[in-house]
Structure formats: C-alpha cells, structure tokens
Length: 244
Image (cartoon, rainbow, N blue to C red; front, side, top):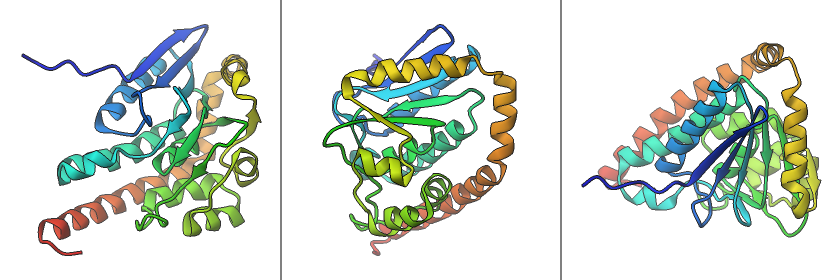
C-alpha cells in the first residue's frame, strides 16, 4: 500500500493572488517533500497567472535545509541542496510578482529563499535572520553567495556571508533581507494588500522587465548551481571514501 505524503504546503488562489503557506509543524525546513510541494504550488500560481504570496506558519518562516536528510545518503542530500537553489532561481525569475511574508525566524537556506522574493515583509519582535553556514562550519555554496550578492548591501554582504552576522527585523531592512517590517498581527493583511496592488501591474511588462534586469544574476546563478553540483558530488565522494 502506497504511503500518502502529508500536506505541508497549501495554495489558495483568489483574486489573482496565490497564497502559499509552508507548514510542516516544526521549522518549515526545506526537505525534498517541501520542495516538491512548493514547486507544485508555484505551478498552480503560474498557470493562473497569479501574484505569489509566500509565507510560513507559526513563529518560523524557514529554518533552512532539513538536516535529517543529510544522514540519508548522498543522492537525497544532493537533490535537496540543488533543489533549494533551483527554487530560489525559479522565484527570482518567476513571471509574476513574488511577495514574501516573513512570519518569524529565518535561517540558512531560509534566508536565501527570503532574498529571492520581489518584496519582503517581516514582523516586529525578537526574530532572528541569519545565513549561518560559516558559523556552523560550512563553506558558503556558490549559489548562496550569488543570491546574497544581488540583494544585500555591499557592507552587509560581507558581514552576512563571511561572518554569519545575526540580524533582527530592523537591521535586516538596513541590510537588504527585508523591505518593510510590520506588527505580527498585521503581516498577512499588509502582504495581501501589496500582492493585490502588484496584481494590477501589466504582468507581461513585469515578466519582461524582471528577466531583463536580472539577466546577469540568473546567468551567474546558473553557473553557481553547476559549480555547486561539482562541489557536492566531490564532498559526497569524500564522505564515501571516509575522508574529511
């Protein structure tokens, strides 16, 4: 009997806005199943030509990659890591506007996902936003560097990527992780208001302009993803061979 996968991503399309909510009951981590369901939701939004409003449930927007997958083997790990950056590339080139309502803490891959939206709204309070790869002993992937480079202000790019600087909502706006901060109770209403406003744009012009203005970024990101594939395969071989 085939096991039914739980629904951890919901997608509701109404008034030309696709509200996509990540909810795995924990940290909304980027797992192979989360990636599969997010891409399915984006397929629906793209088919409906709807503006995307992406958010999470609870106090965490996204806690990064699912670390449990790292213990299940090279193939699953490779698919998850590359899939996460392919998702960012898809959002950065998505044909309609992408609004991200950052409902809480955002770590590692979650921060790169945040940087892939066209407009990012965060919430007031004790919220942590950090790209903490270097802090936990990981070399920052090529793809992550390119994503951070295109949205973070130059001084913060160095501090976020090299030094794993921890940001709160206010400093995250200054750095470029967020565009705006609102009280938590106003987050969805404000994000929906903006999404509806963006839905009134000429979406064909939006798509063409986005691809034009991000042409070099998308080229760089494609090259970076290829470089990461090589790196991840090499790291996997080193693991298999028992080398550090």
